[in-house]
Amino acid sequence: MDLARYSRQMLFGPIQETGQKKLTESSVLVIGAGALGSVICNQLVRAGVGTIRLIDRDYVEWSNLQRQMLFDEDDAVNVVPKAIAAKQKLEKMNSHVTVEAIVGNVAVANIRELLEGMDVVLDGTDNFSTRYLLNDACFQKGIPFSYGGVVSSRGMQAFFTPGVTPCLRCMAKGEAASGQTCDTAGVISPAVNMVASHQVTETLKYLTGNQDALRQTLKTFDLWLNNGYDMRLSASAPDCPVCQNEDYPSLRKSAQNEETVLCGRDTVQIHRETSRDLEQWETILTPTAALQRTPFLLKAVFNDDIQFVLFQDGRVLVQGTEDPVQARILYDRYIGS
Image (cartoon, rainbow, N blue to C red; front, side, top):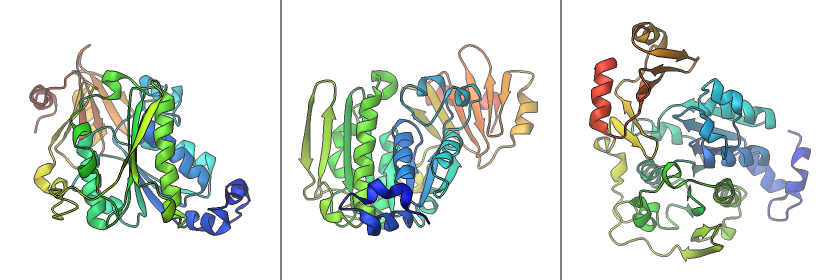
């Protein structure tokens, strides 16, 4: 492979040609292709990381375009799944990088398969339920987890290394219950870029063999209020089920629910089936809904308040409610068991 395109990166002393070759041989898993995920993937692809496995369950909407840098207006008009739209853009940036795009949901059933062959996992999610699943799976498999979170003008980031640092469960107990999301408190794009850049920087340190340069802190900041601080990653919490007891509670099958409230989205995801024939459902729903069909999903608008988005992997987004009970009622009414 011609490394000339990375010449400026290789001039950087800690990387050089040796580190660049390590990057081209590395594989990373990025969970989520939204705000954080799109910036993360953009930087990793341009840096020359050899394989990027990307999974996202959602599709591009107009409100995404303000901060999700891999998408454009055509993606929103055509309701393209974010993973597919991201892959299309990323492959134009660097044809030497392998981008594996998966339209789907991260769950107990598939997390171990997703982790196979990966060197680092990067967090582009928007909820702590999924983050705890990633944390537990990474620590069970001994794979570093580059955590990042952003809302409003605030950001948090840490690089958790099994056997070296505590895990996310030890550090983020208060944040998990804060309740704020980008859809309720808003978000500015520079804060997204800052968090993702910290995530990628720590990942590059690890992949190029510069582990001694890893920042052993949980970094937090508020760009608007011009403040920030670093909390030292000290010993694991004595009662941590993951670090101390190797229990991994999020990996239990009972921890995975059929219904997931997408915080601040006025949406409940229901995942009862493992696959769905969209052509068949287009025929079934035609008499009762206004439909928009793409190769990846079927959007069904029943009225001004309720619409469904059906995916090939069996997931259904019930949009118009955050009440799981109401979502199940609507699902059973139009989809059945």
